[in-house]
Length: 387
Image (cartoon, rainbow, N blue to C red; front, side):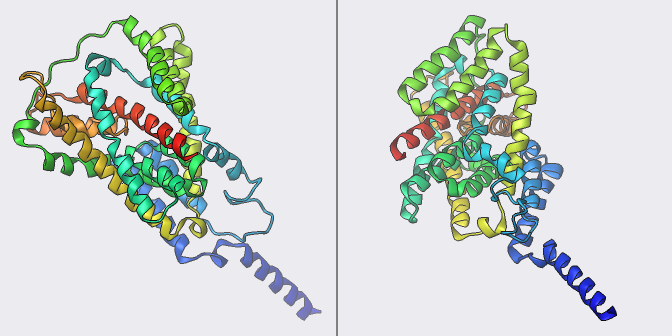
C-alpha cells in the first residue's frame, strides 16, 4: 500500500514536472529570451524607442516560455482560442497599423512640409531602399509576395511593415515586424556614420531659410487634398493614408479636440501595447528561429542603409539645381525614412555638432513626414502589383 501511494505521488510529481517550462526548454528559447532582455535593456539604459522596445522585449519573453504543445490548454500565441492569439488577430489582419496611423496623423504638424513642398522629394528618394531590397529578396529565392513584404522594412516604418506583411506574407509577420521596429529603434546608431561619410564639413554647415508661417486654412485643406491626391494615385494605400489624413484633420480642424486628443494619446498607446506585446510574443523560438528569419534581418538592415544613403545623396543632387542661399543641408536627407520623429532628431543632433546655432529639426520633419506618406504609397504599389 505504501509503495502504491509512493508510486502514485511520484507519478503525479513526474506529470507536474512534464508541464513545467524546464521540461520543454531548448537553446532557441534561451537565445530568444536573451534577445528580449537585450531589447528591454536598450529601452531602459539607452532610451531607444522605449514605448516600442519594452512591449516587444517583454512580449519576446512571454512568447518564449516553453510549454507542452497540443495539450488543448490554449496558452501560446499560435494556439487558436488563446487570449494571446485573439490579441494577435489585430496584427494578422492588419487592424492595428491603420489605428496607429490615425494617432500619428493626430499628432503630426505638416507645417514644415507645407512651407517647403520640395522636401517631399527627400521622402520619395529614401524609398529607393525598399525597391533595392525587393530585388535582393527575389535573388535570394523569396517569392515576389514575400520579397515585397520584406522590402518595406527599408522604410523603417513598423506599422506599414506589419500591414503589408499581413497581406502578402503572413508567415513572416514576426521576423518582419521585429526587424522593422529594431531598425527604427537603432536609428541613432545606424544613421550618423552614414551621414558623416556622405557629407563634407562645408555641407554640414549649410543654413536653410526658416520655414514660412502656414495659415490655418492651408493646414485644414492639406489633409483633404492629400487624401484625394495620394489615394486617387494609389487606392491600395487607403487604409493607411486615409487614417493618417483623417487624424490630421481632427487635429487641424480645431473643433474635434477631444477626438484628436484621444487618437494621439490613449488610443495609440493602447494599440501600441497590444501590437508590441503580440509581435514580441510571435517570436516563439520553434517558429521564429529559421534561416529565413536571419535573411530577413540582413535584408532589412541593408535596405535601411540604402534608404539613408539615397536620402542624403538626393539632397546633394538637389543642391546642384538650387540657387545660392536656397541650398538644402544634406544632413536632413536621412529623415526621408519614416522613423518619426527619431530620424529628424538625428538630423538636428548631427547638425548641432558642427554649428550650435544651426537648427535643422523643422526642415528634417518635412522630409520625415514625407517619408511616412512615401512608405505608405510604396506599400500600396507593392500591394497592387503582388496581390
